[in-house]
Image (cartoon, rainbow, N blue to C red; front, side, top):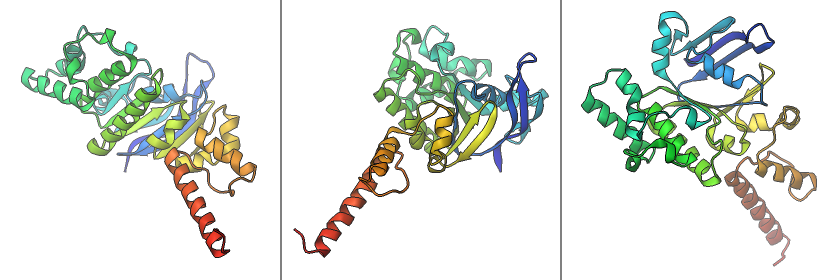
Length: 288
């Protein structure tokens, strides 16, 4: 059963051109889904449909079996946690403790339970030692983790992340990808994220959805979507760097044509297989 379902959703801002045009999409509980496309494709607008910040002009959005409309919006918002692209847009309290507790206070959660939940969320993202710090003096990666903790404290079923690795250094991005995968695996939380960082997509997504000018252009596994190389480039995107290197080597005849590896792990497995085949061929021919 779909946890998120959009049926023929359309939307325009102030009588302008359509930002979403007849979008139909289903996402199952526990999936990791990357929404990709050039700027202006409609990704952020689609995300705001998922918790009722925007309402469609046509079609229907359902989350957890509930229509995102009317009296059900508040119930939907308890299921969907939003993490913004810029953590500074999300953080506004004087201390990390107060930041993570803010939503729980609004829920009127008892103080002892609230304190336990705050520490649980901070421990989950590895930020417990910062509980009494001001969030505004933290690094970009630390702010991302505090913003994530403030959402996780609410125990959402779905995490929606807009450009989660934006402005992070390589180590920070790698650590965040590992953390999100742990959250998905250990807590069963559905991940829906947008990104221009195509190198993280094979590491963080079971499924990729391509959007262009408000419409869905393709969807499938990372291998299926990145296998559509012409479409990827028409949309001003690119292949993961490992895949691009393999594409060049195949074009130049240095390795056999075949499926493109999308990660370093896949590239290593491919090269090990080729080396083993080469070794076997040398042994069969009597070469040393």
